[in-house]
Image 1 (spheres, rainbow, N blue to C red):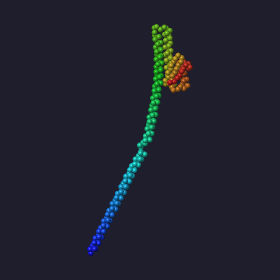
Image 2 (tube, helix red, strand yellow):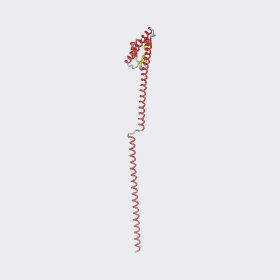
Image 3 (cartoon, rainbow, N blue to C red):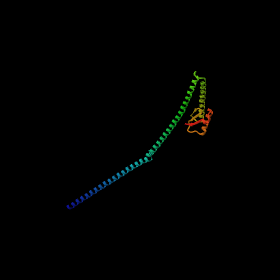
Image 4 (cartoon, helix red, strand yellow):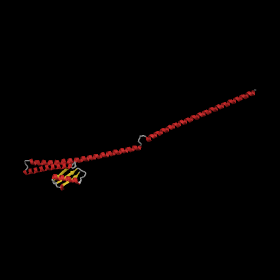
Length: 220
């Protein structure tokens, strides 16, 4: 009887041990499964994050490629075009200024030359008028003074008519110098065509009673 009870106790103990071992094994497997599942979830979450980061990079890349921002090369081209445009505009401005200065210089030449010529004639007239009005002058001197005054006034009038007629032929500025029978005509022009020279010679010859060979035309 005692032997039977002892065997039963042993069986119970073994049964309890088996149950304990089974429980422990089940708990360990459950933890392992949970650990594996958590790891997989973390990996999936990391993959999602990486995908998100990749998409963001791609969007930024597209923005760089297809956006409205100017690439360095385009900026250089625009800068070069702008510099070329500014340089060309500057050169055109300088050229206009040179032409304007040249025009002013030529205008000044004709204005100044006419002023000096008229001053010379005025001084000559003043000298002859003094001889004419002087009580000490001889009658012959007065007659000569009168003739010279008439000649100078006629010459001045003829020069004025010729210069105005030359202007009607398309030459804005001109000046005429007379030295005895030689007549010099200076025209503001880059070049003179043969027909233009002939027109000016005809004007001078007709109005000033001069020989064609004595008329010298030059340009400035």
